[in-house]
Image 1 (cartoon, rainbow, N blue to C red):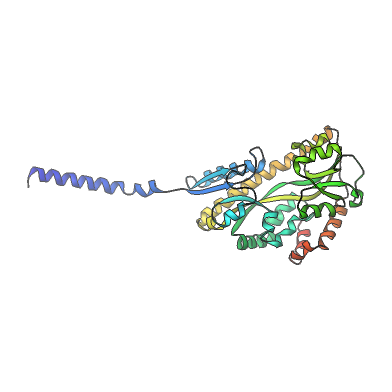
Image 2 (cartoon, rainbow, N blue to C red):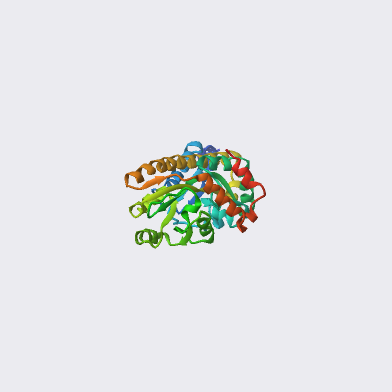
Length: 336
């Protein structure tokens, strides 16, 4: 054996050894993160925009290196209302969807677009975290190809009047031109409250209140402050007629591709995000009553039970209630 042959064999052996030692590293280097794209119309300063950062940070703690969470605010990835279809097609992983979004494809869910169905944020969580939520979310998953993971509190809608007047029961709103969003569902709610529902674009509400085109409007208190409606109104009536919410949802295609452990971690992150939003939004709403009083507005609470009974009776006598599952309203009312 020549020296050159020996050297060649030595070099080949060393190269083989080096290759063998390097092989276990390659799969680790090639490992890719699971991309979770989020699309939401929320603006950066809103709690239900900030909650997605909580979602991302939670996953970074519980599943380091496993997910690439991409947050897209201001409807920059998908237009508002198109997210459910995008998730169903597998073009989007996560979003927050409303009861109105769901009701388009799951008519049974339309009960949550009606007035006085959900009493308060606490009951809202109990409904959707209990058997009722489990049953309806199963329908959502089957019919929409998305899985709701957590319930997010958006706010409770109240009545805000241009001129102060005694309001105890729905009859006290007779003749009041109450601005409502323009869809037939919203206008029906305004009429059910006892008022004359008047459609008007949100951007025109301030001037409408100022000039008297409308006598009042309904919105969650944070919206009343943000739009400065308190500058042109004199009263807030705490009717609490609609406890509004959205649902953090993930596409079934994405969810089913996860391991059981990953599903658990993603669900927990969604619930942590919702809890963050809910806590801060409730705190903000609580502070706003005093804010409006300091601004000179009267703030009063009517006979909410009288409003609830009247509005629910109006809905139950309507076509809207025909698609509600039998007994569901009673089960909701019994949820304490």
